[in-house]
Image (cartoon, rainbow, N blue to C red):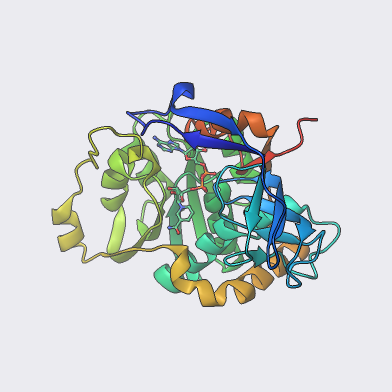
Length: 309
Ligand code: NDP
């Protein structure tokens, strides 16, 4: 079995030397255990059972497991999440890590539980062409809203337009970000689905309508910030506009996952939810895929296919 381990905590942006590939011999599974083999990997690896001494997980079943960046792993079954038993044959299984998996659920809960987005409202989402962001924008369209998205390349902006976003812009080349945010929604934003943080947020907050709502899903621009600076947050604007800002983790609604996944799969099958994946081939390329994702190389969910061909 191969596994990637982090040998050093990241100092700023991750480097190849922060990771090490290890090879180890795994013992035969004991009673109650199963041997897993990675098929697709992400931060939340998707595995299939290749040996089983646990009747709950017969050989060949597919599960989602958070056992790390590993090609194989032994498990006693605790924490393994079976992939929907009636997963449609024409839908790629890798979507269990993306649109019909944790990122899709994150988008759904952020919109329905945190923002409680209403028909006719205007929503802003950043990192909009990524795994979470692309689903956010499409669910907002399903709900009859006006959607503005930002992303880091012209190809991503084109993709957002294809997905039905009303306005999309490249935050890297737009010139004045403030002006881009204003002209995309001159009356302001009712809701802001926040994935990026830092400078972007400070400007976006200033374009919110009074009583606007912000769902803080993540702040990817600050994750590799060695000094952990979060940028200036305009408290006066939050005060004067009487904004409601709520951080959330998708795990809060764990009990609703099966229903949420069925909803996402339903929209997907109806053609209302489209997807793109950025697939890197080969387990050995995991660190490169991870660093590429942080640098915005991915359009849609970044997944690693364990096969190298
Ligand atoms: P994505 O697929 O969106 O990939 C990350 C994207 O972030 C990159 O493609 C890049 O796109 C963008 N990005 C990277 N650095 C910056 C930067 N400095 N400024 C602006 N954009 C940047 O990842 P996910 O969909 O998996 O995650 C999106 C967000 O959701 C993250 O903040 C993540 O932490 C969060 N998250 C939160 C969860 C929760 O439960 N709260 C669960 C899952 C994810 P671009 O080219 O546009 O720059």
